[in-house]
Image (cartoon, helix red, strand yellow):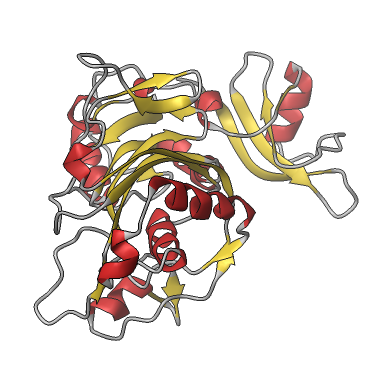
Length: 326
């Protein structure tokens, strides 16, 4: 039972979620497939046992979010973490903030569909000179890491209001993804306390792995000439795993596990018993995959992940001798 989809609560780090899962599952061999900030909630995929080897492949999938962006105040962490005393905050001029409209926000946000690179936040887990960026930032030497490739696949403004508590408060999953629910339906999410009553936009976003939504808030504010920060964030999907499939973190030991195949955002190819056995012995399969591909054995269990080699023929990246099943 190696793959677990949990709903990470607000205020807990991904590392803290892993530590709690280790206690509940009774094993030290637990990891996660994609960090979720402490001030964000939602889908966190946890892997245990042999499934920990899946981490880089599961983490490479697209992520979907509900994101609240507050305009008029920029923070060092780019989110709603209360700034330290004496922190350098960016405040908006009254003019641009007063002129802010849903139409202007929507127009600037749509331009992110063409963004291909972006600077991660200074307070992030990106490594610089061998150390995590947030470590240097918390010592007072905050520098944003270099820009890196990102991709925005969907950017949709769901609502805009003069302050966050005037935005939709309940949500449900529909044909187009997660959005506001009709009165008396859906579910709510825990969000950090507002730093100030500010104009706030609610977005539905789908992005490539490694795209920081805090950077989206920062850059959207800059485009609108109104410093901004991420006022709330909920990850509603990671790869093929939707929030509706998640259990509370404290129920991880009793909730049904996921099929590892569901967690892998990769094409799949089923092998016969002989071919699967050969792959598990380290023999390169006679395949020419178009990209990273999951190889399943004759019983549907994960046997290996391969990618195109220099000659085009499949090169083995990972092998699971006994196969991964729920």
